[in-house]
Length: 222
Picture 1 (cartoon, rainbow, N blue to C red):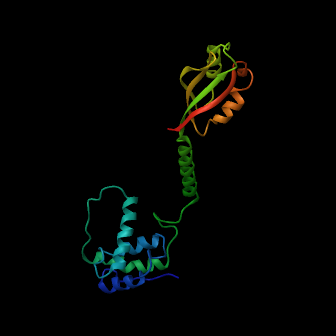
Picture 2: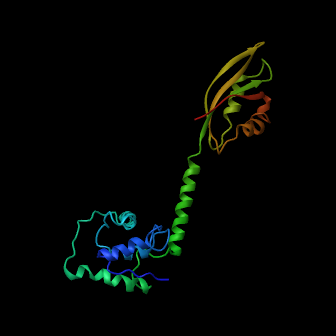
Protein backbone atom coordinates (compact mmCIF):
# COMPACT_ATOMS: atom_id res chain seq x y z
CA UNK A 1 0.00 0.00 0.00
CA UNK A 2 1.45 3.35 -1.06
CA UNK A 3 2.26 5.90 1.63
CA UNK A 4 1.73 9.60 0.97
CA UNK A 5 3.82 12.35 2.54
CA UNK A 6 3.04 16.02 2.04
CA UNK A 7 4.57 19.36 2.99
CA UNK A 8 7.85 17.81 4.10
CA UNK A 9 9.38 21.27 3.95
CA UNK A 10 7.19 22.23 6.93
CA UNK A 11 7.29 21.24 10.59
CA UNK A 12 3.92 19.49 10.28
CA UNK A 13 5.19 17.39 7.37
CA UNK A 14 8.37 16.43 9.26
CA UNK A 15 6.28 15.52 12.30
CA UNK A 16 4.27 13.08 10.18
CA UNK A 17 7.49 11.58 8.81
CA UNK A 18 8.92 11.31 12.34
CA UNK A 19 5.88 9.36 13.50
CA UNK A 20 5.94 7.09 10.46
CA UNK A 21 9.64 6.21 10.91
CA UNK A 22 9.24 5.14 14.55
CA UNK A 23 10.68 1.61 14.74
CA UNK A 24 11.70 1.66 11.06
CA UNK A 25 15.08 1.98 9.36
CA UNK A 26 13.75 3.02 5.96
CA UNK A 27 10.50 4.11 4.32
CA UNK A 28 9.56 0.68 2.95
CA UNK A 29 11.06 -1.54 5.64
CA UNK A 30 14.56 -2.48 6.71
CA UNK A 31 16.19 -1.99 3.30
CA UNK A 32 17.11 1.11 1.34
CA UNK A 33 14.84 1.59 -1.73
CA UNK A 34 13.94 4.22 -4.29
CA UNK A 35 11.09 5.26 -1.97
CA UNK A 36 13.71 6.66 0.39
CA UNK A 37 15.28 8.66 -2.45
CA UNK A 38 11.96 10.23 -3.37
CA UNK A 39 11.10 11.23 0.18
CA UNK A 40 14.68 12.39 0.81
CA UNK A 41 14.42 14.73 -2.20
CA UNK A 42 11.36 16.34 -0.66
CA UNK A 43 13.05 17.03 2.69
CA UNK A 44 14.93 20.29 2.19
CA UNK A 45 17.39 20.01 5.09
CA UNK A 46 18.51 17.78 7.94
CA UNK A 47 15.60 17.36 10.39
CA UNK A 48 16.26 19.02 13.76
CA UNK A 49 16.85 17.39 17.13
CA UNK A 50 13.11 17.30 17.77
CA UNK A 51 12.81 14.72 14.97
CA UNK A 52 15.31 11.98 16.01
CA UNK A 53 13.81 9.21 13.84
CA UNK A 54 13.69 11.40 10.75
CA UNK A 55 17.18 12.72 11.47
CA UNK A 56 18.65 9.23 11.74
CA UNK A 57 16.91 8.15 8.53
CA UNK A 58 18.07 11.31 6.71
CA UNK A 59 21.71 10.70 7.71
CA UNK A 60 21.53 7.06 6.63
CA UNK A 61 20.13 7.96 3.19
CA UNK A 62 22.70 10.75 2.82
CA UNK A 63 25.49 8.25 3.49
CA UNK A 64 24.19 5.78 0.88
CA UNK A 65 23.75 8.48 -1.73
CA UNK A 66 27.23 9.84 -1.04
CA UNK A 67 28.77 6.42 -1.81
CA UNK A 68 26.84 6.32 -5.10
CA UNK A 69 28.02 9.78 -6.13
CA UNK A 70 31.68 9.99 -5.08
CA UNK A 71 32.36 13.27 -6.92
CA UNK A 72 32.85 16.43 -4.85
CA UNK A 73 29.74 18.61 -4.94
CA UNK A 74 30.21 22.36 -5.31
CA UNK A 75 26.86 23.03 -3.59
CA UNK A 76 23.77 24.64 -5.08
CA UNK A 77 20.78 26.44 -3.65
CA UNK A 78 17.16 26.49 -4.79
CA UNK A 79 15.06 29.51 -3.81
CA UNK A 80 11.58 30.92 -4.28
CA UNK A 81 8.42 28.95 -4.89
CA UNK A 82 10.29 26.33 -6.90
CA UNK A 83 11.88 25.04 -3.70
CA UNK A 84 8.57 23.82 -2.32
CA UNK A 85 7.34 22.32 -5.59
CA UNK A 86 9.28 19.00 -5.37
CA UNK A 87 7.83 18.38 -1.90
CA UNK A 88 4.25 18.81 -3.14
CA UNK A 89 4.88 16.59 -6.14
CA UNK A 90 6.59 13.87 -4.12
CA UNK A 91 3.36 12.30 -2.87
CA UNK A 92 1.74 11.73 -6.33
CA UNK A 93 5.02 10.38 -7.64
CA UNK A 94 5.21 7.86 -4.79
CA UNK A 95 1.64 6.72 -5.46
CA UNK A 96 2.15 5.98 -9.17
CA UNK A 97 5.63 5.47 -10.62
CA UNK A 98 6.30 5.35 -14.32
CA UNK A 99 8.58 2.36 -14.96
CA UNK A 100 9.89 4.05 -18.09
CA UNK A 101 11.46 6.90 -16.06
CA UNK A 102 15.17 6.91 -15.40
CA UNK A 103 15.62 4.99 -12.13
CA UNK A 104 19.05 5.18 -10.55
CA UNK A 105 18.01 3.16 -7.53
CA UNK A 106 15.62 0.58 -9.03
CA UNK A 107 15.46 -3.14 -8.44
CA UNK A 108 18.52 -5.22 -9.22
CA UNK A 109 18.62 -6.37 -12.86
CA UNK A 110 19.83 -9.70 -14.22
CA UNK A 111 23.00 -7.96 -15.41
CA UNK A 112 23.60 -6.63 -11.88
CA UNK A 113 23.13 -10.09 -10.39
CA UNK A 114 25.50 -11.64 -12.90
CA UNK A 115 28.13 -8.96 -12.25
CA UNK A 116 27.80 -9.55 -8.49
CA UNK A 117 28.27 -13.30 -8.96
CA UNK A 118 31.39 -12.70 -11.06
CA UNK A 119 32.81 -10.47 -8.33
CA UNK A 120 32.18 -13.15 -5.71
CA UNK A 121 33.90 -15.76 -7.88
CA UNK A 122 36.88 -13.45 -8.31
CA UNK A 123 37.08 -12.94 -4.53
CA UNK A 124 36.95 -16.70 -3.93
CA UNK A 125 39.66 -17.26 -6.53
CA UNK A 126 41.87 -14.63 -4.88
CA UNK A 127 41.43 -16.24 -1.47
CA UNK A 128 42.39 -19.61 -2.91
CA UNK A 129 45.52 -18.15 -4.43
CA UNK A 130 46.46 -16.80 -1.01
CA UNK A 131 46.73 -20.31 0.47
CA UNK A 132 49.10 -20.71 3.43
CA UNK A 133 52.62 -22.10 3.25
CA UNK A 134 54.64 -24.36 5.52
CA UNK A 135 58.34 -24.98 6.13
CA UNK A 136 59.17 -28.67 6.49
CA UNK A 137 62.39 -30.44 7.52
CA UNK A 138 62.69 -34.01 6.25
CA UNK A 139 65.08 -36.70 7.47
CA UNK A 140 65.82 -39.06 4.59
CA UNK A 141 67.62 -42.27 5.62
CA UNK A 142 69.65 -44.57 3.33
CA UNK A 143 69.74 -48.37 3.43
CA UNK A 144 73.28 -48.59 4.76
CA UNK A 145 76.67 -46.92 4.87
CA UNK A 146 77.38 -47.93 1.27
CA UNK A 147 74.46 -45.93 -0.19
CA UNK A 148 75.62 -43.13 -2.50
CA UNK A 149 74.31 -40.08 -0.61
CA UNK A 150 74.92 -37.78 -3.56
CA UNK A 151 72.62 -39.86 -5.73
CA UNK A 152 70.13 -40.10 -2.87
CA UNK A 153 69.91 -36.31 -2.67
CA UNK A 154 69.62 -36.05 -6.46
CA UNK A 155 66.72 -38.53 -6.30
CA UNK A 156 64.99 -36.41 -3.65
CA UNK A 157 65.44 -33.12 -5.51
CA UNK A 158 64.27 -34.67 -8.77
CA UNK A 159 60.71 -34.55 -7.43
CA UNK A 160 58.98 -31.52 -8.91
CA UNK A 161 55.36 -30.45 -8.45
CA UNK A 162 53.38 -27.21 -8.12
CA UNK A 163 53.79 -25.68 -4.67
CA UNK A 164 56.97 -27.62 -3.76
CA UNK A 165 60.28 -25.80 -3.28
CA UNK A 166 63.43 -27.60 -2.10
CA UNK A 167 65.83 -25.71 0.18
CA UNK A 168 69.13 -26.25 2.00
CA UNK A 169 70.37 -29.68 3.00
CA UNK A 170 73.14 -31.38 4.98
CA UNK A 171 74.33 -34.86 5.91
CA UNK A 172 73.96 -35.84 9.56
CA UNK A 173 75.72 -38.86 11.13
CA UNK A 174 73.37 -41.37 12.77
CA UNK A 175 75.93 -44.07 13.76
CA UNK A 176 77.83 -47.04 12.39
CA UNK A 177 79.15 -44.90 9.54
CA UNK A 178 75.63 -44.18 8.28
CA UNK A 179 74.50 -40.64 7.51
CA UNK A 180 71.02 -39.29 6.84
CA UNK A 181 70.04 -36.42 4.58
CA UNK A 182 68.33 -33.53 6.37
CA UNK A 183 66.67 -31.34 3.76
CA UNK A 184 64.39 -28.29 4.00
CA UNK A 185 61.43 -27.67 1.77
CA UNK A 186 58.71 -25.05 1.52
CA UNK A 187 55.24 -26.15 0.43
CA UNK A 188 51.96 -24.47 -0.48
CA UNK A 189 49.53 -26.22 1.86
CA UNK A 190 46.67 -26.58 -0.64
CA UNK A 191 48.94 -28.02 -3.32
CA UNK A 192 51.26 -30.42 -1.50
CA UNK A 193 50.58 -33.16 1.04
CA UNK A 194 53.75 -34.19 2.89
CA UNK A 195 52.36 -37.67 3.61
CA UNK A 196 51.59 -38.20 -0.07
CA UNK A 197 55.05 -36.92 -1.02
CA UNK A 198 56.68 -39.49 1.27
CA UNK A 199 54.40 -42.46 0.56
CA UNK A 200 53.98 -42.03 -3.20
CA UNK A 201 57.20 -40.36 -4.31
CA UNK A 202 60.14 -40.72 -1.91
CA UNK A 203 59.81 -44.31 -0.68
CA UNK A 204 58.72 -46.02 -3.90
CA UNK A 205 60.55 -47.02 -7.06
CA UNK A 206 62.88 -45.85 -8.40
CA UNK A 207 63.91 -43.68 -5.42
CA UNK A 208 63.67 -46.51 -2.89
CA UNK A 209 66.88 -47.85 -4.42
CA UNK A 210 68.61 -45.24 -2.25
CA UNK A 211 65.95 -44.27 0.30
CA UNK A 212 65.10 -46.67 3.11
CA UNK A 213 62.73 -44.34 4.99
CA UNK A 214 61.73 -40.71 5.35
CA UNK A 215 60.46 -38.85 8.44
CA UNK A 216 59.15 -35.37 9.17
CA UNK A 217 61.64 -33.79 11.59
CA UNK A 218 59.93 -30.39 11.79
CA UNK A 219 56.79 -28.79 10.38
CA UNK A 220 56.09 -25.07 10.80
CA UNK A 221 53.43 -22.80 9.30
CA UNK A 222 54.83 -19.72 7.59
